[in-house]
Every structure is written in C-alpha cells, then in structure tokens.
Image (cartoon, rainbow, N blue to C red; front, side):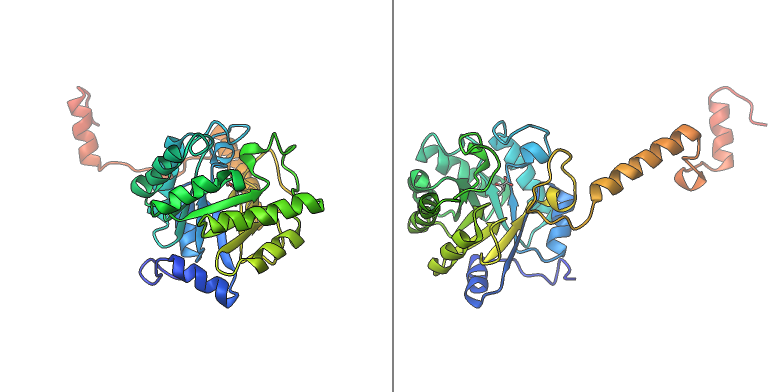
Length: 291
Ligand code: KIV
C-alpha cells in the first residue's frame, strides 16, 4: 500500500497513458474526508464527488435538490482526504443547464474553491456548447451519458439505456459529439456492453469510463455506498458489494445500545479520573470535607 509521501498526484497525461497502455482506470464516488483518505491510500486513480450525495449522504429521494454549495463543501473534504487522486466535481442540477455562463462560473467554483481537477455534467449533443465553453475556460470536462440521474424521470427511471439500435446509435454519436466539444472523458452509465465497447474502440484518446456497462471501458466506476451496502433503500443489480459494512455498522450500534442500557458500557478503560489530591482540593473548593 502506498503512503502519502510515496504516491504521485494523478495527472491527465497519466490517465491518457493508462488508456493508451490498456491499463484500466479505477474510479469511485466519494463524499467525505475519511473515505477519501482510504481511497487515496488504496491507489484509486479518479474520484467523483457525485451529486448522488444528495441521496447517499443527505437523504433526498433524488439528486435534484443538491446545490452548488452542497457540492463544494463535500468536494473540499474529499480533496483534503485524497490529495493524490484526479478529482472530478459533479455539476448539480441547474448549475449548467441554464446557460454557458452559469456552466463556466459553477465549473470554476469546483476548481477554485474545492481544488478539483475536472468537472462532470450530464447530457449529450444538447450540452455540447456547455462542454466546449467550460473546456475553453481551461477546465477539463467529463461527459455523462446513458442513465443520467438528473433526468431519470424523463428516462423512465433508473434502468438500462440504449437497448434498441436507434437509441444505442444516438448514445454512440453523442459520445463522439462530446469528445469533439473537448471532453477528456465520457462516463457511460448503464448501457449495454456492446454500446460501451463500440464507444471505447472509437475513442482514440478520450477516456471512456463505464458504470454497469461492461468490461470494454477504459476504466470502471462504482458508487461507494453500493460497494459497501451503505445505502439503505436500493441495491443496483450491477453493483458488486465488496463487504456489507452497513450490516457491521448496524450490528455495532445495536450492541452499543444494549451495553449502555445494561450498564456494561462504559468500563474503566473508557474513562479518565483525576489524582486523589486534586480531587480532595476540588471537594474543598466546592465547600465539602474530603475524608
Ligand atoms: O452522482 C453520481 O454519483 C453520478 C454517478 C451515478 C455516475 O453521477
């Protein structure tokens, strides 16, 4: 395992080299400082501070209520915990849709206030001008196609996208449009593996990241909370669970509750006392008589 001092900061040329060499890029979502520290220590290449934090961290039913201020606060914490990763800030609902000016201003906030390396936004050809404008401001952009949670309602829910040939072609064309607009990477979420494979084969330099979209992508993304059973309401089929940390935490809290209730916690190793003479002085100061 690398340590803080050993690990070099991941750069965009390094990510391009990984694609060129066929070395898969490892990406996870992250929203807080301690988890960011673990991910950096484990050698994760890219972190997405996703607006999924609205659901996983803030308890909303969708990502739509998430604000720029929410995103900046979490991205700052993640950057403090993971100084070496390539950090991508996810542009929340209505932070880029209204205009290219809004898109540039809010993308700039991720860079200036949170130390992000790039931003991500959802949408295809209709967002190409936003991508081009942000890139022209010097900020790397990751596109996001397939299942795009900010428009999950319009897409018919959280389900596979691009199942029929025409819709699949539109996704593949949109990948090319976003790359032409300057995107350094495109995330394909929940599309058939064939669609992801064709997009990755056609993209000579730009990086294709897959989420539930098969092995041909240049890198893989998982939602951290799915990986460890930390989101109580929903477990997507495609997400591999590496440990049921949610169960471990719940069991621990139940045990704590039982021990407090039964007087088993705390034990002497869980508290501190004061020296006897200081205690005697204290009793005197309080008007008592130490005996
Ligand atoms: O917000 C997020 O975590 C995302 C992923 C679903 C890709 O956009």
